[in-house]
Amino acid sequence: MSRRIIFCDRCGNEGQHGGYTWCRACHSRWERAGRPASGPPPKRNGRVGEYAELTRDQHYTLVNAAARMGISERTAWRYEARLRAAGIPPATYQSGRLGVHATAHAAAA
Ligand SMILES: [Zn+2]
Figure 1 (cartoon, rainbow, N blue to C red):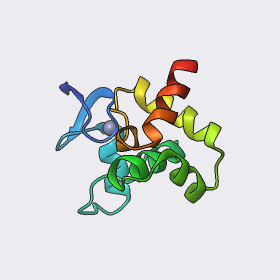
Figure 2 (cartoon, rainbow, N blue to C red):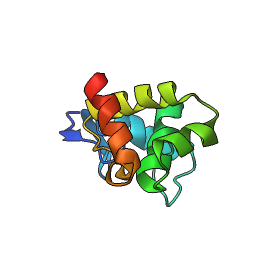
Figure 3 (cartoon, rainbow, N blue to C red):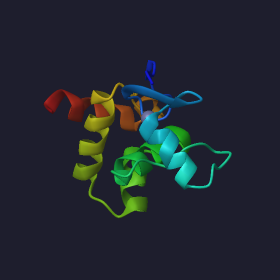
Figure 4 (cartoon, rainbow, N blue to C red):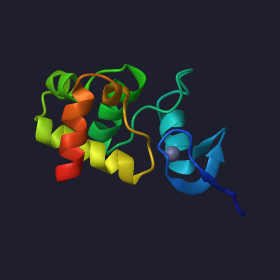
């Protein structure tokens, strides 16, 4: 059975269509989680997914998300780089005072 290739709505990866607007990995995670109305839970490399939810969906700043997750700011920057590499747009913190900070870091990276 051939499946369409899509860009997943949830994780941003290009992959085989699993259902709705999600890739197979996200769709099966969603089924395993009992099909929550909120969609697939964060990916199993879950810390990045958790970080993405905090910064993208809940509008945490990078620093606040790092504090909330108990990770270093440096680790948060690594997550940020992975998200950007996956084509997920930068978080909203870029528009605040922290944006200066963020831009400086991005330029140095
Ligand atoms: Zn996906």
